Length: 391
Image (cartoon, rainbow, N blue to C red; front, side, top):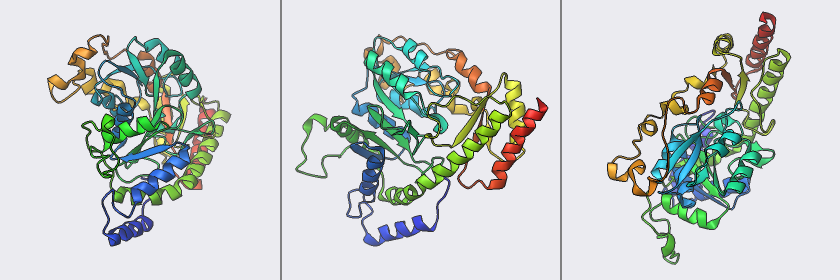
């Protein structure tokens, strides 16, 4: 969470004063945020959820993904991306990332099977996927595209807002995101039918609040991932800060990448320079040894930095329930054991995406922050210059 303070407190106090703290009360904080977020993205429909995972699940359900389907996810993403697929009853297939640390379109196409129904490109650490190439593959091969923009809130791809390009999009507003309500999320969709089904997945009583809204064809037994008015109030304040924070991070990132280029340090490829969140700047090295040496020098100047390989559940080798095929709390509900999924051929191994592991070991990501001061940015620039002198 970058910033939170008196404005959020005042908004929550005003909400409490109304006495309408239920999602479908009169205060309308969730409604207000959903309309604002949909308008910002240029999509028709938005529904808040309790988390990014719930948003992904709702998007999958909205697109009628379930048993008998496989869904391709990248080798580098938070484990929840694959777990949402399992929650829908489908089987996750894992594809390599490329040097951009996002889904490799070539490997995406290679991993498609007969029963593959969808792909979830993840805009990891605020970095944009190659959406033109991914959408091309999806269109040719008949796949749904569900954008996981949980780590790229507010970013864009060539001027188009992330999460609005595919058939559905998912966002997270938890503690670590560009705007945050502590926990929270939202899914978006251009299709009313997808939105209606996804809304039932989010709220089991989605259509019962309005007695005149009878839609028996989608009133299935949904679950409950309904957002709170408190989360809506916080996010309505947070949203007012987003553009300024993104602009600052993008400006700092551009300076650091420029300094790296002058020092002869290879930056990771960018699919949409100037449009992504600017939350991370990445450099790629010839070996893990060089990468760790660079990491140590950067950490000494007080800027957050890390190797993606060290990020635990963001790397497929640490997706323990997936790797062990423990897809549900009960064997009878485990997607890997469902008869509808027997035709899906999937075997997981630690080296099934070895190219990804090699890239993740040789990459260093530097964390931008909207409250970084000029002295901190200059310190990184000087550290990059020092790397040139060492070479």
